[in-house]
Image (cartoon, rainbow, N blue to C red; front, side, top):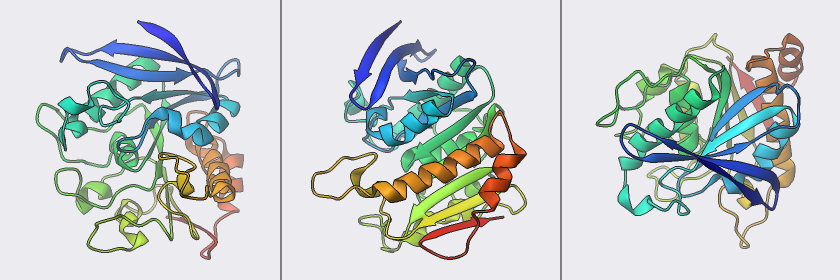
Length: 278
């Protein structure tokens, strides 16, 4: 079953309800690019309690670049009708089911992307060995996922992923954070807690780290959690979109060595835009 759902910042999305063997339906938003044929597809996983609707600033450029975008509405979203039925880490199992359902629907090699909890979800599809929840068989890696975009992935968390799990990342990845990307309540109030996803990954696999000076977890509410109390960090987000676009052009389904050369020309050890590669 599918119907259309408009969004104020995006073209109309189709809403797919994909039945699973568990008896649950995965709700997936699908935006179609105007490019004929599409360059490829992006599977996007939103942050905890958010929804695809709050990521227009990421999704719209992917559509403009010729990518179809598929984005599950995970059960941890406050907009999901069944969110109360999946407390705590029960959402981890369901997220994996969602992403597997999307991969089966895309049915071609694709780019997997995510923000925050969704960044961990995306990295797992790219080979990072997250903890297997009850009822899920491994491996979590999806061979159809060609590369990963991970915006502000979480630190290692018991029950989700360990440093060794992050070390198993198997595909090219761009991992982003910012120097104001703090985790409330975390024992170490330091943006560097987001670095293990990059630091633990083996070198030589085209892994990139993007650090943006002064950027917080949601680019000032420009993505994930809009807030009138914050100032959207739109220029910084535009730079993240630009560099991540070069990355998916370089390493996605239509891998382009010229895009890789343009991306590598942006490598810099210094802020305000630090871009490392290993």
